[in-house]
Image (cartoon, rainbow, N blue to C red; front, side, top):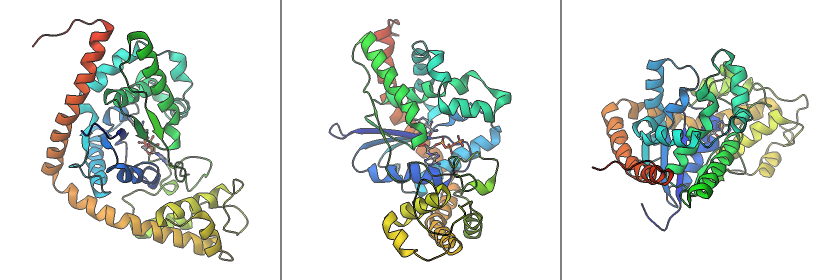
Length: 334
Ligand code: ATP
Ligand code: LTN
């Protein structure tokens, strides 16, 4: 780790095949930050257990997500890249932080409320405790920056509160992290309900573009995307459907919103939707093909996980033993 560079931590849950929203809101920025920061990227598999998972599916989603990270340009030689459950310190720090977190802080979280509604048959303690595990992920590495989409901002606030609370109670220990949320693309909406975020666990497959979708599927989903009644390609809060498509097109092509409005002046929604679909397919096709190649070599992925866990563990356990000492637990002698 280069001491002069800032440390950055982020993670995605292997809870399904990732969407265009995850790519634009998270992974795309990770790549750009790799040369500027010491980057640590995790596969947050423990977080996925907060909702019911099919065990074999979870395992295969974890390999899929790892292959997608690499196919998207996250080079495991240039960052620390690991599976959360391989480093025990994450669960251990969660216990300590749980003793300083209040139920009221967790029960008011938007994600908890949303998921309690969508998984009403399984509102478990882990679902409520999700942000504390996330805080542990970040604080173990003393991350300065955490690149995430808009939906995770609240969880970053709890993380900051817990870091400050611990530092005040036991003396300076944790770095208080800053969220890094890009101005465009931090919230990509569902293609079927622009008021909702695009989510990989949406039961309606037409609501999201998955990184496994082929060109025809992508274009078909964009053609079916819900838009507003007028036919003008203009970005506006009153037109969330078309504005979402403009945001996607802008982030994927690098063109500004104004230049897109000019380019498509007088063009109907139908043609614009095809243009957005084509541009997204151009982005996703090579990533999907590369991902499928990488996936064939499980031994390679296992070796990446092994090395990443060793690197992460060294940092994480250094922080955890400091925490254990500060709260008064007796040190284990080796
Ligand atoms: P799930 O549907 O299983 O809850 P998710 O699709 O919301 O999952 P996460 O694994 O929770 O995805 O999020 C991974 C990253 O992607 C986070 O940084 C999150 O902020 C970002 N992200 C998720 N959805 C979007 C979206 N619609 N737009 C932009 N960023 C997003
Ligand atoms: N909760 C995150 C995934 C996640 C994460 C993290 C993100 C788990 N641990 C630490 C940033 C830092 C989500 O995006 N749903």
